[in-house]
Structure formats: C-alpha cells, structure tokens
Length: 350
Image (cartoon, rainbow, N blue to C red; front, side):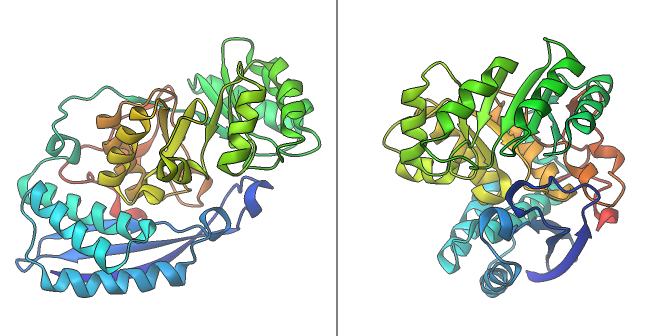
C-alpha cells in the first residue's frame, strides 16, 4: 500500500472562546491509503495542541513511521487483517491521533473493497440515529440564550454550555430561561476549577438543573475527591478520560466522554467504551473539532457503542466550510453516512 498525507488548515467560524485557548485555525491531516489496484481509503488525524498537547509536527512524524510500515504490509481485505495492520502501526508509534487516521483509512479501504459501510462490517445493520447535543461557547448570556433557543428550534434535546468564566451563573440562567425545564443542559468547564473551589462552583450552578458537569477539574485524584464531596452530582471526564481508563482500578465518576482521535480510531474507541463500561462508567462520544471523516468514524463507532447520553458530534458548523449534507443533523439526530467505508460525499470538504 502507498500512504500519503496532506495538511489542511481550516478556519474556525465560531471558536468556543475562551475554553482551552481555543485556536483560530483547526489543522487536520488527511491520510490516503492506495492499494495496488488503485482502490483508496481515507482517514483523518486531528491533533489539537491546545486540547490534547499533540502538535501537528508530532502527528506527521508518527504518520511517517506508519507510512513505512504500511508500505511493507499486504492490503487488508478483512477485519482480522485490519487489526494486524493497526497492531503493526502501534508498534511503530502508539500516538493515538496518528493511529486514528490509519485505523479509519483501513476501515474505509475494506469497506470500499467489499461495498459495505463500516457499521455493517462491525455487525450493525439499520442502526438507530444517534442523539446529539448542541454546543454553546463561553459567550455573553444574551448570546448564549439566543443560541440555545435556536438549537431547541432545530430539534436538539440537549445542550452543552461552556463554563469556567466569571459570568457562568448568568449564562446558565439565561440558557435555562430560554429553553425551559425539559432541555438537558451539560456544563463543560474544561478543567477550569481546582479541587478547593470546584465543590462551591458545582453547588452554585446545580440550581439550573445541570444534567452533567464535564471535566470540572483536571486529574484523577481531584475528580475522585470532588465526586466524593458531591455524590449526588453527575460528573464526567473528557480530557482525563484516557487517564481514567489507563488507571483502570475503579470508577471515579459517572461517565466518560470518548473521542475517536484520543482513542486511536474506530477500533480503539469501541474497545475503550467496552473497558469503560466494565469499570461502571456511562459512555458518550464527542468531537475534537474533527472534520467530516472524523465525525463519520465516530458515528460508525457509536452504532456499536450505543452511547448512554447525547453525543457532542454536531461540531462541523464551527468550521468555516459548508457541512456535508450527509452529516447534517435532523431534529437533533444523525445517522452514519450511507455508502461503502466511511461513507460517500465527504472528501469534497477537504
């Protein structure tokens, strides 16, 4: 197989300011795997240094090592062969963000070879749609309320609102007032609080009927202390989800937010979800401001995982390119794209 990469920088139309040093450009790396007969599979590496600490340069270096490995391997024509190829790349470099691109491209190649979608290759036919949350950045309360009302009008039943700023209470009150009592509201702090101040912040914000506090503090010890202090408040881990799985000794909170990039692709995300549930966690899936291939990969994985909560995969609208019709949510729901492999109609976006 011949492997090539292409770096793309996409402008953000609406950064989730000021969370996690939100960038103005979103770099994505497109991986193309070409079989000897010319058939092609595609994947996407989505490192986001402000979020996961992984630079584009590091991801490209890992993909260079994978390219050398993939060149020597026979084309996988079935799932077992795919797993052997991914295992060889793990040996070359275990960086999840690069492995995700390899894993996606191999699944895409096998799907196009067999004429099957990835969820069909994974044993799922006619999957139900995945329920999504809309995301509201750390914006002024009036703007947050308007975005919330628009999302509700579009059919979303859940919102994720960025917090960790001085006007959190005003923002959440404005959102709750705009959408009424039935809408689920998740508060995402991106680890903004420390273990001393977090209990007070969560108690103050819980009055707005918060479904889940996502990554209120960073680190496993701080999370465990927080959940012990507030046993009736639902907490999830996002940035620290991988560390929780690696620790693997006990359940630290209610849920884990998994991402196709951080898990190393479709295969890794499915394995991480199974391990999380063994430990007692609920599971849901979100995007790291992925492109269409990353979103499609997450949706195919979600068809197997069957998330326990609304998923944060309605993020393509924050990138300054038209959302492919195949990935447009309808009434807050979305299906994995139709067609072989990751799906048709996605590559023109790149």
